[in-house]
Length: 78
Image: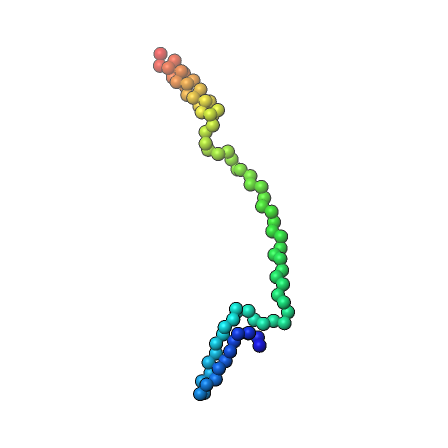
């Protein structure tokens, strides 16, 4: 029997089949699953550029540059 749980009935010229099982075919050898191959480790992520969030150092430098620009503009207006 290849499929344990499969039954065929014959009655008054009619054939009926029924299957009550777990869907596993009967085999003479036991199934031993093989372990999958070892996967490659992930490479280290490299950031292509700095984040666009301004730091306090950058904001201080920007304020200083704007102050110089405003001071230069005020001197030229005089």
